[in-house]
Length: 390
Image (tube, rainbow, N blue to C red; front, side):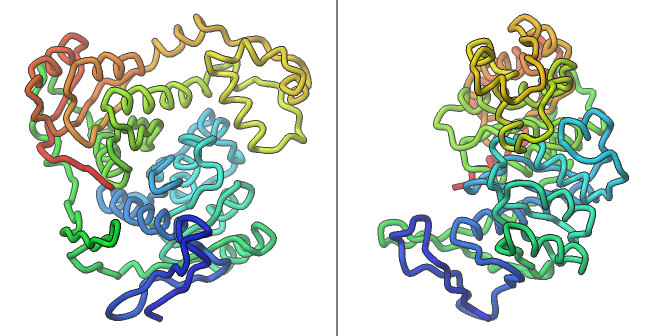
């Protein structure tokens, strides 16, 4: 099949809509549901990201995409007990692919609401069981086991979109895009991101352990498929804060840093012990946690609707308690899709526990950025390559 008709484009008034190939057949097959225009944008970007993470690390990978940027991306490292708790996965053995999905979905559970899932490997039953209870629009993978496909076909009253993609598919080298009736053409960004991107270490600190190297590569590959400007914080094999589509670099760094802070604050003992009622929905619980760890929590705690979520009224996590907890966080990796123009980005990143940085370099103020890293004994590598994505 070389063409697939879609219900509409980005908005209901944008008709007709389709995906098609000028030559040959589409590399995708819809196994269930009816994915739309934006769904396929998320699916194809997400699958590329997951596939490249797998190629770079050798581990199964997963992404959670929303509006053509990743809310989360991760590889299949085992989960510790606290990670299982904050990702809301059962305390049972999980396959590496299931761990990758749990990390990707758990990076930013609020932003992942209604996401599109992409997997690098064949979806197995363990992974499908984790996807099943989440609010999600669809999934793309190279294939599905019979048990996994049965589970996913029952999701959303049988309407969950399940797409299979040919892992052997190689896209043509030229990319075309129409804007206002004018066609743009560019070469596909087939840049392979590997350890050579981290060889030019420009700071006094040049100690780059293997886990930090891995996390920096994850951040850079994630940025390759994130709407620019963008910054990505990574820890333990997964993105924990993605700042996408901002016009200012410092706003990217702040946005992603705030998300990384939230990811870490979800591991605070007071957050882990929140006495939720057993019958509340997952989205209500996720939103409540997001509010609880925010600076606005003291304004909400007295609200009646908030109190109805819990068996007993929880204690407030104060601003000082949040600050003290975040001061203990370290060893986070950060990537930027373009150079940092000022040292203020490093100052903000340091507040969120960043120790390792990868960015293209090339600013007239590189010296200031390097000096700021040296002030905090942080390591920074200049990759020499911009990673804009639009």
